[in-house]
Length: 412
Ligand code: NIG
Ligand code: FE
Image 1: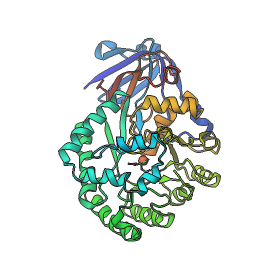
Image 2: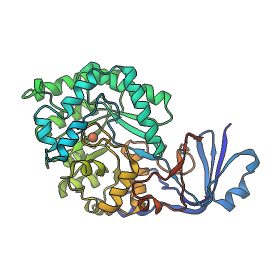
Image 3: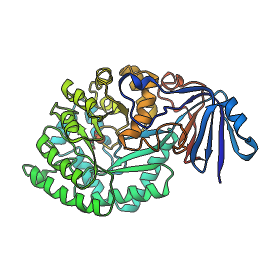
Image 4: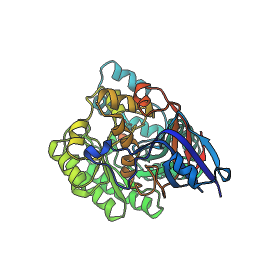
C-alpha cells in the first residue's frame, strides 16, 4: 500500500463538502492553519491540524512531504475546455486585434468552420500526441481533472475520433478527463438553413457516442445565428433521454435565454453567461445549475466580464474554467484566469478557489469524489511555493504551483 503524509502546511485549504458552494458560502474554504493530510492508496484518509495527525499516525510508515511555509489546496479542475482540435487560428486572432469581431469572422467562413477543416484532416495519433502536451501544461498549472469537448468534427467520424482521443488520454495520462459530446457546435455553410436537419443528424451521432460510452455530457452552442433555444431544447432533451448529463454554451454573445433553458432542463452547468438575464440567473440558482464563467474568453474577445457579483448574490454556485480552444480563447492558463477573476471581476481569492475546486467538481458531477481535501476523496492535491493563498492573485499571471499530486502520486 502506498502511504503518504503531507505535513505542516501553513494553510491547508480543504474546501470540504460534497455539494457546490452557493452564494456567500463560496467564501467558506475551511482553512486549517498548520495542517496535515494522510493519504493511503490514492485516497485521503485523514485531515487535521499537524499536531493531531502526528499523534495519531506513525510517520516512519509513510512517505512524508514537508509543506512548511507552503499552502496546500485541492487540485484545480478545469471544467470547460475544447482541448482536442486540429490546426490553429492565429491569423484570426490578429484580425480580431485589428478590430474584426468573432461573429463577423465566423460569418465569412472562418471561426469554428476553419477549425473543422483542420480537425477533419487530423489523425487519431496526432490528437493524442498534441492532447498529451496540452494536458502536461495544464497539469503543471495544478489541474488534476479536466473536461474536454468534441465539436470540431461536426460529422460522425470526426466527432467520434475526438472523443476516442480523449478516452485514450484519460487512460494513459495522470489528468482525468470528463468527455462531452458537443456535436452541435456550429453550422457549416452546407447546413445553413437546415439547422433542424443538422440537429436530427447530431442526435443520430449522439446515439453512437452513447452506445460506445464515449461521453458523460452533451453540450450545444445556443446562440443567435447558431442554434436557437428551440433547437437546443430538442437536442438536450434527447441527450437527457439517452442518459447524458447536460451542459450548455449559454447567453455568450446575445441574450437568448440559455440560462433559463439550462434551469428548465436541469443542466449540470450553464457556461459563459456574459449576457444572462436576472431571471435566468435566479432560475439557475433555484435549480442548482452551476454557473461556469470563462473570464479568459471575455478577455481575449475584449468583451465585458460576466456579472459575477450579481450571480453569486443571487445564490448561484459559480465555477471558473479556461474555455481553452483554438478560436475565442487559445489559453489553458489557470494563472491568467485567477488574475482576471480577482482583478477584473472582483472575486475574492476564497471564491476563486471554490470556483476552481469543489464548484468545478460539481460542474462535472464529481463533487462526491474530487474538489476538496477530506477523508474519502481522491488525493488530488497541489502545493504552492508560497505560504498563503493570497499569493495566487498577488503573483499575477505567474504559476506558483510547485507540486502536483494525482491519486496520491507526485506527478509534478
Ligand atoms: O466556448 N462559443 C463557442 N465555442 C467556443 C469557441 C470555439 C471556437 O471559436 O473555436 C467557446 O468560446
Ligand atoms: Fe467553450
